[in-house]
Image (cartoon, rainbow, N blue to C red; front, side, top):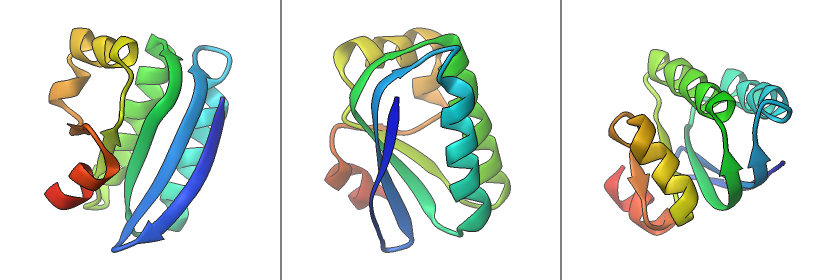
Length: 111
């Protein structure tokens, strides 16, 4: 699993997540994002085009990040999910909790 900060503009940090978020990588994923969340004041846009797989551990991490951002009046947005990853978000009900967009541009327009 790899997280790359792509840009920060208009009070939004955009990151790309690649690989797998599972029981092994979820703690590292959450710790890295928590570090950014605790230091910043911007919303967070996660581009998941490179994410191949997400487990329930990964979903818990994303939920934790969502709650921390919301507590501070900020938001988490997801974009560019592959069909298999989107299906996990839909089945778990997470797609009703966290806004999911087709592209980064669509997410930023809806903010």
